[in-house]
Length: 463
Image 1 (cartoon, rainbow, N blue to C red):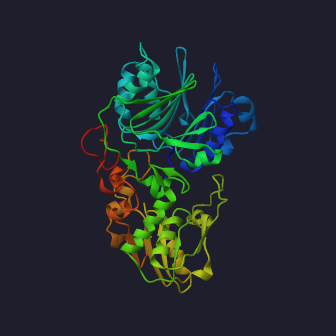
Image 2: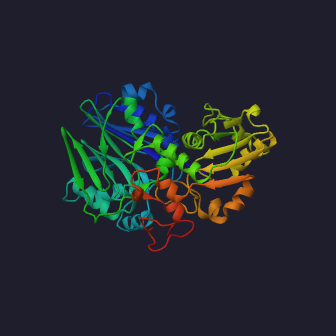
Image 3: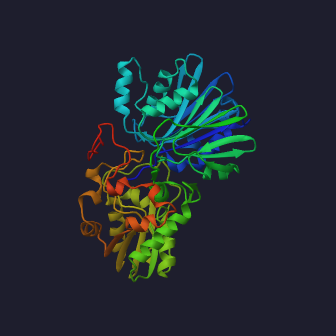
């Protein structure tokens, strides 16, 4: 199962900073549905509100209109990739050092967390959470002695390894920075005279904000007063390695990330699949919603009709009462249901973005067979996922990834398909503008950043 990871949003110098942050997080809810948080600064006091659940479940009018005062704000939506699913691990994470109030919101995952945490604890640091983001705060404080805030943050960046697109609120400064490989997206924009930052541009669209540019890999942007200052990390240049899964699955299709229009990329992935693996069929359909845009591209290239023969229930929320254990496939059925008249006797091409474990797809294909589908052909708009991700996507361990342990033919038989085709890596890279700028480690096992153990990634934890 793929899980969303995190989204961040920040705004500087706006009278409705908390409210705009709420809407910025709401637009990025797809990036994390476990917890949400907002912090604000009014020049004297830092205020926070965090909770487990979706953005509208955590915040209400009292928070936005009365309690979260201040013209500087930042927020975070989270799905845990490091740290347990607990309220104390919800972000933004807050700390106080002398006269500084520090808040951090982090999207990504550090690969040397345990090494740094152990070293800091030996030096006397006491940790409040299990999230890797807290390591960053301890490092900044460590380097504050005699240095500016900017120098301390840049020195901390020299110690950490991994993926991080993060926001820091330190008194009157709003700081945005991105790891040297640029693995996770981070955008910079403007609402009137107010500067804004977000993981995705869909947050800007909701606020009618102007997109200025991306925060560059290895860049730190500091907003203070009327000045915006850019700094480069004192780190040897690294190859750009954006996460390709932002384009395959995670980013909203109406967003622009890494200079790419997500919608266009997904359509092109579908078109490339049709070029690689056309099959005679009655129609093409997606498994909604993740397969929709690739299915459109496949249908347009192949000339086959495009149909929605599987309907998703968009009103299934987190609080849906779970069925008893003897109704194991109920949660799958309540989310997506076939149009029966469209299935019987039909030759169907199904398009989806990925296969992780294969169990959910197997149950859906079984249902289509029971309804009389004549042929079922499956097309996947990413190559086989054979390796876990250590940079902020909660992919299963290698032992649970079906493509890591089975051939294409074995997966085809397990799911019950007439044919199965994954897009080739070459086909996938034809769908993007700069093919050499993407991390493909979950397909190839070639990790751009070694794990904290150094050397080779292990199959489970990466050390």
